[in-house]
Image 1 (tube, rainbow, N blue to C red):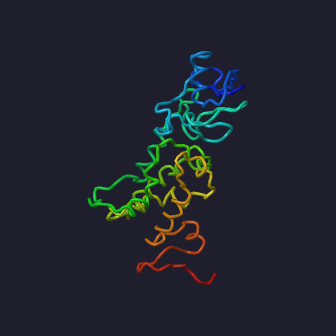
Image 2: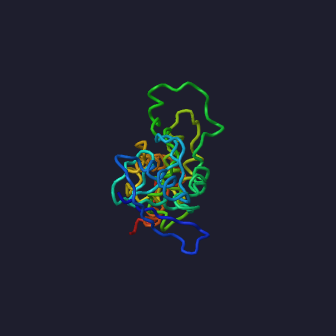
Image 3: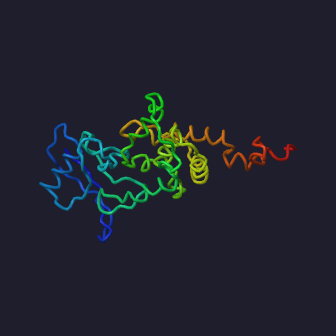
Length: 247
């Protein structure tokens, strides 16, 4: 079986290059194959792993252009393995995820100090139960095409976590969180759905972004492009102001 790995070292004169490895593999995971390559063929190969059971998200990478977890993906002959996109590559398949994680802070995707402490019913818990299961693998961040034109985009990674807290009944005031995601946020998403199939726990960031748009509309926000085309925004009484009706 042949597996091709994109090797990259910033200090190397040749930069990135694809290396083919001929290995013996039968129904093995990609992580098992990479470990075998490192121990038996090439000790310089670098990649991340930890839990080996699809829980921690540290072994996320791309195979044939699609984001996967190396510990759960079964290798096929001819697979091409690459690091996640939209992040700085440190070496080979290891990327710096700090940039992706920083968008959580920019989106205020965390519990606020004004949150109310109270018991949550099973029904209330299910509202954002799936979003709470995010393993921080950043696969959706890597799959998002918007970053190619807007590196400041908050992205599906942060926005789906924003919805997790906006939809939490213990959050007494979500106005700050909604205000924070208007610029380079929910309206910049193209709803292309690329982030949905790559999530290893089944979260649908696209759906969460649509819910955030709906919530924003209720709170008086609208798509800036719509506002620019039709004059703009909402009046002081909260009703839509469509500007000059002469158009």
